[in-house]
Structures are given as C-alpha cells and as structure tokens.
Length: 370
Image (cartoon, rainbow, N blue to C red; front, side, top):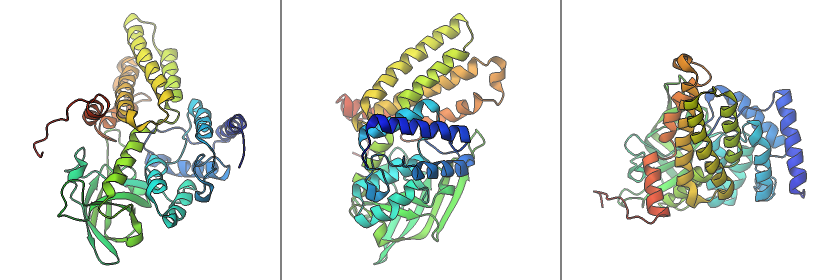
C-alpha cells in the first residue's frame, strides 16, 4: 500500500467523522476498556480493521497496513481531537501485540496478530500478584513442565477486563532454583482453558474493570511460550516499557481536555489561579508528549506526570461543581477512578525511583534483599 501521509490523514479524518455521525465510533475511554462498552468497542475495532486503519505501522502479513510511523502519527492526529477510542484494548494492541511482534515466532505472529487487529482475540495482562505488584520479580505463580507443555498454578490480580479476555500475557516461574528474575518465563495463555477462575473486583466507581484470576494446574501448550525458556523477564521488561511509553495522541487529547476546563470554569479568582496552574503544567506535558514519540526512556516520567495531572484535573472538576461535586455526576466517576491510576502500570513511587535511577543517575534505592 502506498499513500502519502497527507492523503492518509485526510482519509482517516473523513472515516472518523463519518463513523461519529453514524454512531459506529466508540468514545474514548482511556487505557482500560470499561466492560460496559465491550460490544461497542469490538464493533468499532472491526470497523477500523475493515476500513484499513488497524495496525497502521504493522507488517501487512500480520494484518497491518505496512505504513510508516508518520502515518501512525497522522492516525493519532485524526482520532485524538475527536475523543474516540483508537483501538479496542490497550492490553492487546500495545502490550500483547508488542511482545509478539518483537519476540514471537512466525507461527505465533500469524496465529495472534491479525485476529487481535480484527477484535477476534481480546487480551488481558497476568503479571501482578497479591504479594508481587511493584516487586514483580518476586512472583510465585509456577509453571511445571509436563514434557509437551506446562501446568500453571498461582493467583494474579488487577488483571484489567480479564472476564472478557480470550488470552492473557502471563508471567510464571519455570525454574524455582534460579533466583530473582532468572527462571521466569512469558506465556500466551488461553483464558478459556480448564483450571481458570476469574473473579471481577468491584471498584468504588461501581464498575468491574479489574479482576482476580486463579490458576489451578491450568494447561499451557509448548507453542505458547513467548521468547526463551526462563528468559521471560526480558520480554516482560519490554512490555512494561511499551506500557509506560505508549503516548499516541495524548498530547492532542490533553490540550482538548484543558480547553474544556477553561470553557466551563467559573470566573472566580481562586478558580482562575487553579486553572492557570493546570494549564501551564498540562501544556508543558503536552509538549513533552509531542516530542517523546514513545521514547521508552521517558516512559516513567510521562506516566508519573500524566497520572498526577489527571488526578488534579478530576479534583478541579469536582471542586468547581460546588455542592453537586458530592453527588454522582459527570465529574464524580473520573474523580473516584483517578487514584487507581497511581497504582496501575507501576505505582507513582516506583516511577519516581525509575526516574531517579535511570534518568538522573542517582544511587539505587537500598534493598534489604540485596
């Protein structure tokens, strides 16, 4: 496929505008797909795929468009200002697909990537455990070899939309004798197989976007190992870097959100002062987002800044609602949702450690285990 960036941008804009007008487009919902929009999000993803906008810079043999990063940025520039979802679920399109594209065999790429783009496979992430969240390397879920595969036993938690997923990206310990990150493997895990129990967790918003997942000798085929045996930590590290650095059109969306704050804010001195602080901070972050182009080194900085700013924005919206801010309304659910983002994708404390150690070159945080 050969098309100029400008022509592609025009075609993408026309497609999105027509999809909004017809009601096909799914409104933007952030990193985690709310279960309540599952059907609409899947229909929207299939429309994106059918019309040639899914996997803009993915290889054509994987179902993508085979275009450049500039074309992908043009796609982001089309959906960002219009507040529509760019894809069905982050866990599939960024995390699982990113890992498969980077580490998968040709058979794995052919089996999973096209169906992910077409929304025939929905993914979740099976990393965190009750005792291994920020300290993920201490995970205790075990995969025991059966000769022609493995059986997995353990518990995962905070698995986004696991109740809707067909597959998960799973970390499990395959060699208990190797310490730390050694002995951990990365699997493409069938959520519909035996030995899998998913329990949704009700959040204070009333929604159930996160789940506990219990695994009781759940089978995993040999061809579902992604990357080297006992070398899954390198795969996981790349996935976590993708998770923190995938910024897409967030700069555009952030400017749109800031403009919305200004349009609806009361004309009061204290409110104007708060609004100015948010605008300055948000505009600086939007500039960083524009320039980073997914640079993984800036991932922790961007993740921390976005999480903290979005928390401040939700508080501002609730506060400017006056007494109505204590009632459920348009501003209330994002306010209740925001604290969870300080934990999801790596806590804000962990991001600060990463910024200090990896960006600023400060000494590593002391660890009793070391």
